[in-house]
Length: 228
Image (cartoon, rainbow, N blue to C red; front, top):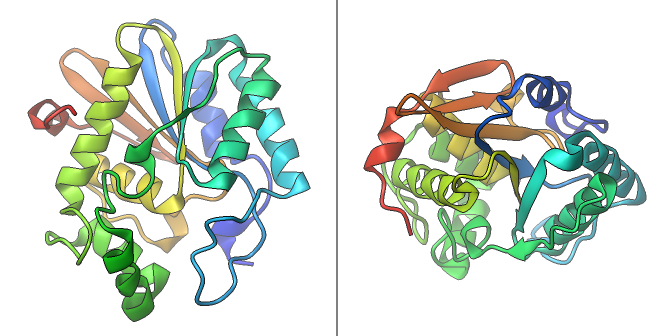
């Protein structure tokens, strides 16, 4: 098992949940909970979360509690199941919304069939490395910086003026790439998200603040992005 796949609630996420502002909307871009290994050469679209993954999501939902306002999720099964468990753990009536921006076609992946060749040629690590550091688009995918800005603006618009936590459940690729671009740091493998790791985004004083793992920064470029 790789370090970024270890099981247990991620301590950085728990730390930020305790330190986030409570008087403004906060977008929470979160990786799904624990799943079985993806068979080699497959996409794993139908893989569910494990029993332990469900327990983890319930525990994290309880930590979100009454601060949870909205839940958006990638349509992929393990993300939907994670969102359902978060809502149950929080005791929330929020109904998870299937959000295509979090999957494909979406903010980063424009054509899944074409983009899959990137994984076959570069491997998952190669695709992730490109998304956090390169300035060009891979086939079937959007230019990474623009994709990150577009997704961030989308999440902040969903939060609107409603103080609280607005959670978006997705995959490690979107969390890593969006956090890296917002922070201006080419995150290495050691900072790829374990299960349920989250990046946090909120507006204050005309700046989008970003927190991820041990890092925090302001990303003024968010205001230049198209909101769709």
